[in-house]
Length: 101
Image (cartoon, rainbow, N blue to C red; front, side, top):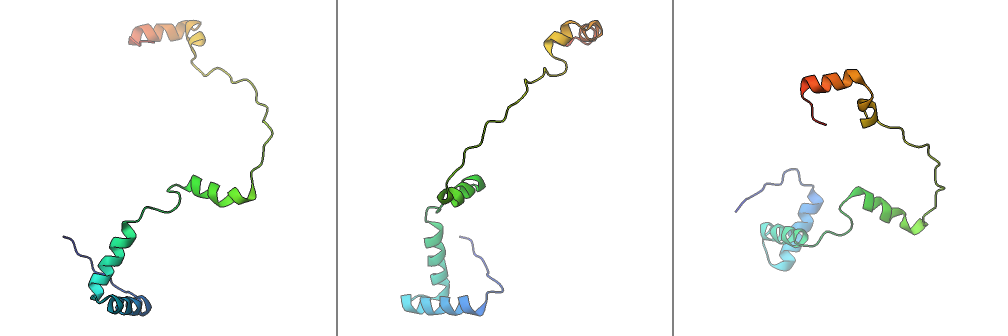
């Protein structure tokens, strides 16, 4: 079983831990162990990623609809199949290098 040391703990949490331990009839170490066990065994509350957290934060304000942005037709990428077929220098390099398409 592992152990940890908590350094530079402010006086207020240490005092509250001592009082809570006394109320429960435990040592401070047992009380700290019980608190950690209780907190870490709970299911996480809320989203686990930033996008969902932001969405949930602004959900009460409602959404909005954006107009569709007109876009031009996408151009063919450089080195497309049509360009390769019509470029003799490219075809020679392909055959010389043994490149498979």
